[in-house]
Length: 416
Image 1 (tube, one colour):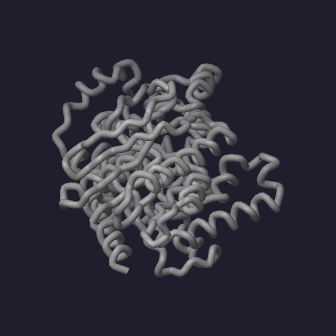
Image 2 (cartoon, rainbow, N blue to C red):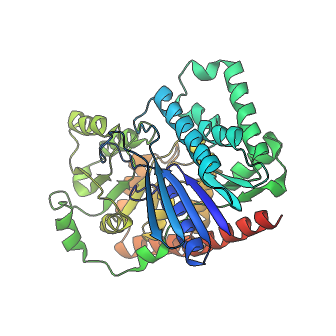
Image 3 (cartoon, rainbow, N blue to C red):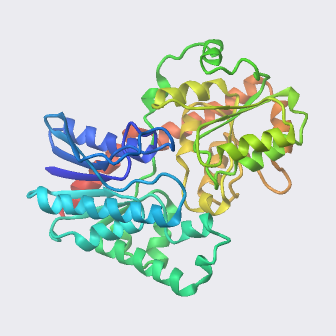
């Protein structure tokens, strides 16, 4: 087969969805299929890459895999207008490149920036006879309700109604869609009225092999990442994007409510809200909180998370209800117990409960109470929580399982 992959992100960016599309490209090219991966120049995390406009670049990775980096508009910061244009511009330029430069192919598997990028691809696709499978990572307009919950935008019914209609149109015009959770599938099936046989669940995965490699001793890694000054056990850690909706501020506020000289909090990552979080720590005069950058690559994630005793996952309840965050999977593969603010009946909450790998924050058990509770567990008890999470993740979120599902879907769609 000749397979065209379209992805809004790609390594060296550390975004899980980008690593997944690379895994797909690598698998099919090694199986002997001809693969073209269309992406853009790296831009995430904020401040990591040179943001000057770059020309189109074509790289032959191996005899069967070609990577095309387009010169589309990029804007990693939070701005509704610019991010919307980024989405549209990449989707439009990706499908334009396919129309003009790739004459014969069997399938497109597309993961553009959600919504406008997806719309551009289905609108301007000239080869309607060739199947296009759309990967859905975020649900719109529902995601607007999370990010812009106080905005006048979502109060205008005609706008939200239009967004629903556009998303339904994208799903109908796609040959097949892959979604990341059961809740996504149900929403498309029951609310968007998309036939169930047109929807497949492909949960985000992590490359489990990276977490199984030998790792340096904890003391060496503490020195490597300059964490010597704050290490008081247990160590609670958040690793991921520090954005406006990440909820790190709430964790810091709750951490300030306990006698935190007994333990530590590490916040690893970058994002638009990082400066605000640093100022909050200073204002509250909180001890034993440390901010560190995460170098590119999964190896750094594995090493830094190995230092923690417990991982923390603040999450917007609306987001947790419809998908399983990639951070949760990485935490579980690190064999660490997890404290999470997801609701009981959400997809994320069910994973925590079913695996018995941690604790859920709620009104009766807020963050600060769970911090104190967990601090009284023995090291052996915490290790057992982590082991249960790892075993659950291997059985459900491993790269090998995810790739096998993708292979079956693409073969099925092409044959049909």
